[in-house]
Structures are given as C-alpha cells and as structure tokens.
Length: 141
Image 1 (cartoon, rainbow, N blue to C red):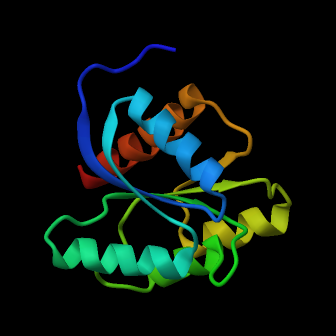
Image 2 (cartoon, one colour; image 1 turned 60 degrees about the vertical axis):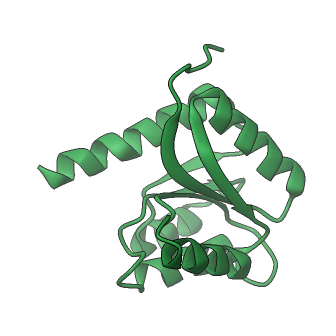
C-alpha cells in the first residue's frame, strides 16, 4: 500500500460499536493521508460529537458509519443527519455486512452517498471516499 505523505485535514467521524473496527478504519484513513479523525460507538454518541465539533468551529466533514449498532443504528443516524439543516449535506459512507436489496434501497432513500462492505481494505476505502468527494464536487459545478 502506498502511504500518502501529504496529510489531508478533512475532519472524519468513524461510527462503529466495535473498537477494533474503529481502530482499523482510523489506521486505514491515516495510511491514505487523513489525519483529523474522531470516533463514536453508536449514532447517539456520534450526534454528540458532531454537535460539540460544530459548536467548536471544527465541524465533521465526512462520516463513515456502521449499519448495525446498539442504541442508534447507522440508518437511523443517517436519517437524523439528513433531517438536520446543519448536517444534511455531510458525505456519508455506510460500512456494512448488509447486502440485502431492501437494506440498500432504504439507505438510498435516506440519502446515503455510498456503501462499503465488510471486510474492506485501505485502497477500497480510498476509492469510495474519492468517488463520493468527486461526485459532490461535480454536483457543485
């Protein structure tokens, strides 16, 4: 894997109930050049982090969230963000083992930017992030 030597300061939030997955994802993001990374164990904690980051003038700019979590799952978290005037446009990448058509349809209807299936590698993560950011940039033109 080629490590990016130019750090990107985009602020990421990783949301997953498993510490191991959060740690691995954070490591992958570091390896592809992203350095501002926060994490949360569920959607409720993630919303708290998003609010405090926003109030501190350092808003989260990209969310990578698991689907299946206790207290608030990824789909509910996504719907909550999309219903918020403050957070509705934040890029959202769903990490999941769910590949059933109805789950995909529900997430698309809720405003997901893209999916990544577990397990995944840093090059796949980079490709998904780049694809989302490129699409967003094209939409702004």
